[in-house]
Length: 347
Image (cartoon, rainbow, N blue to C red; front, side, top):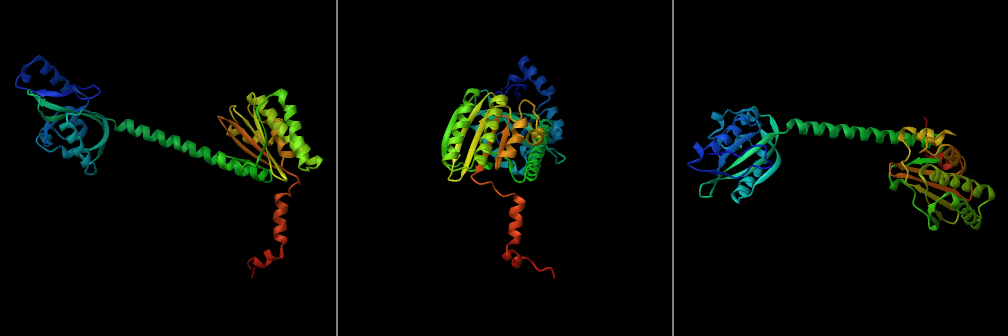
């Protein structure tokens, strides 16, 4: 019986004949099978092993004398028995199986990950009488891929923890003003749209500021409130122009609140530099908000920041009245008589 030539994408169909044993071609194929680094196994339609090359001995641990005559199930994990049934059915239907990644069991009980190709074996009349399989041990490469995937996951999780910590720190040191977002779902719900600029450029910044002033005055914002809002929004828009080549702005309004959304498509802010880019006046890397962001923090009520490799989105919120500091709100809650009654007794 001849075995298929190794090194090909799939094991080619093999013919078994009386003449094969003495031809130069059969001798050449036999030498290839004998010296292949891949396990090459022949079996009949009942699953009985009929040939077993030296590489199969090395990979699976059984000698040829031990394996030949046994069922192929000696190397099939119990939970993969259905897989072998399926392979036999496909071979009987003249199908050739290429590069199936699966597991096999060694003689010592350990598992080996293999890439298997299976082809029918035919007799000289063309009838399928068995199957030839080529299996390559890919255990090390699969283990390496799994270790690499684990390392990448650890890096991602570490970056996520860093972002979470940075978010909590920024929220705390800014008195609840600045929220570092991780996805669009972390951004605030947009208020009704009042106006939009599809392209912010140096020559449109003045128009943007004037429109924002008009909208704020129409809603009865005191001078200090709309002036602070224009300062913050102007800085956000200017940074989009300077550091990302432009962007777009939208103004959303409710009765007593105005939101300004500024979006650019630059390289974003490096997570390791966010604390400096947002809190340190005068700091800039060419892709950060630098001085403008620290000014936004002094003039806007709330800021949401979503930044990444695909760009940066800043949302500013300003109310008609200046909000009370978060510490004062907590103090007011404690002053409520009901809060004292609800508190647990100290004795």
